Image (cartoon, rainbow over all chains, first blue to last red; front, side, top):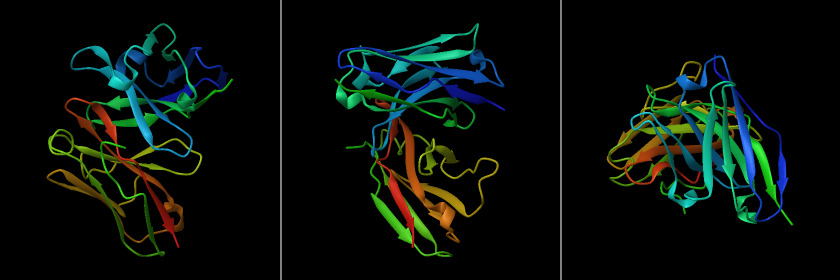
Length: 119
Length: 109
């Protein structure tokens, strides 16, 4: 059974960067396609990017191109999402989620990491 | 605005059947499958329906999904108080990639 455990809440100043981690257990990271989804307070879900197994590359939502970097450390089965040039609108809960190729859906989700951007 | 359009709210009484719609376009729902997620208050989303109408193991058969053209629907029959949650449709878009609906808040009266 796959489990995703994310790092704790962060408070950052505008202009700074944040790096959120997502530790996988029950499977190895190389067997999974990891995606990141965020949710601003009181708002809906927003896909940020993830690994596309068809192309073998990480793809990003156009909105975040140039500001987001998603990486993986296969030695520790941990995925990372780094978002730079933070602004107040980036205040949100950030989720990692596995993309299941068979189901064509995000089937396992982390518990979420609250990132607050405030001066 | 979200790429997929959902009503912001829906409601029903216990035992009733409610449906939630999700409207898209030819580049997303019209050419790819639709998934539905349930988000209980204060928790992470949970996969409820995948590939338009398939239920993951453990999801009650009170939940069903359908798709026609560029629209999809989630139906909940025999409504229960624990179904009170936010529901999101999602699909892959040929150019935008991952897209979600704005979410529908379901209230059980």
